[in-house]
Length: 110
Length: 118
Image (cartoon, rainbow over all chains, first blue to last red; front, side, top):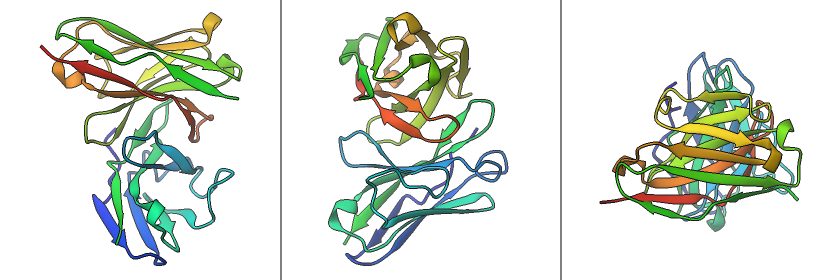
């Protein structure tokens, strides 16, 4: 399994919306509805923000949303805030008890 | 409260062996799957492998097959990650994580930093 493909970096101004893509294959993202997203602030433990493509855990703001089309999943953050600046990772189930992460995207809030 | 408590940071020489641990509490160990995730310095997350059904099922990412050994002792609700012969490229932060079924990782350990240097 190869890593899922994410843009290395994205940026946006406070209040704007940004979308981070996560491209896999028909063996992972394209087949399973088990895409999740995590954010990681510097030197911190990653935190779950989206699971099962578009579900939010309790406590995650509604500004975070997820979607999927074919082999590409997306994370959209609307109403950007300074604290959203972090690294974001997608992860997909790839069958037979194997998962794969994306390479990560650094979000800069301008 | 669900907790995954990992063993302390390690400093090792190339060629040495190592076994790090992840003690879980607050839930039934056999009902969830524990995986290991590597993060090399300044790099992204890499899913390494998983142990499920308590301790009877183990799967490795192809990238880590043959490089590490995942095990568990369900009598003490603890998972392990071990190396028989470390190399400098094994220097990284290692997280144990709990998978919520086929879906997301819902809990993370605090991480164990492994440094391999001569």
